[in-house]
Image 1 (tube, one colour):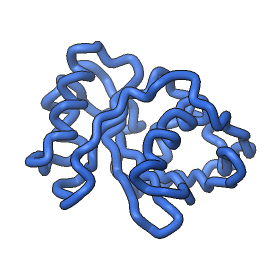
Image 2 (cartoon, rainbow, N blue to C red):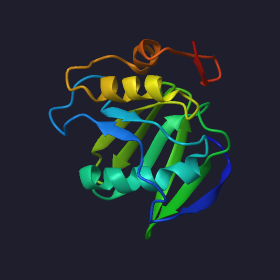
Image 3 (cartoon, rainbow, N blue to C red):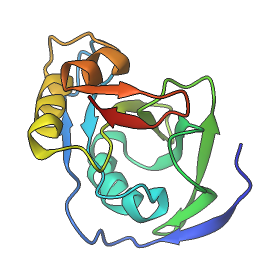
Length: 157
């Protein structure tokens, strides 16, 4: 796990997240939707995402991600009045992020690289949020014209 600092997140998101979700139930496939952050700064991007997902998950407890996907993420973040754990794992599929609620409900998202072209990103957002889609993150990104590097970064093909 990274040894980054604690961070206080703004409870008021600066912008709306670029996010598409499958209907809440029943869950199908590897991801519950997709998120296209505007930067590779996890602490800056989380407030809008967490605010959007709180309606689905209630109180947020933690966020997990692939360790190589975000440079220098903090280990904990304060969002509103709550401390949220941010946990990086090498075992988590690259290009995914899971937000876990206090009651253990979770939403796993395909993370589309901030540098992705709008057309490719929209394709990945739409495909990942399709209720009939059961593809994993690698196949979803490949369909949108991306491939993974060994470091977890995403490259446009």
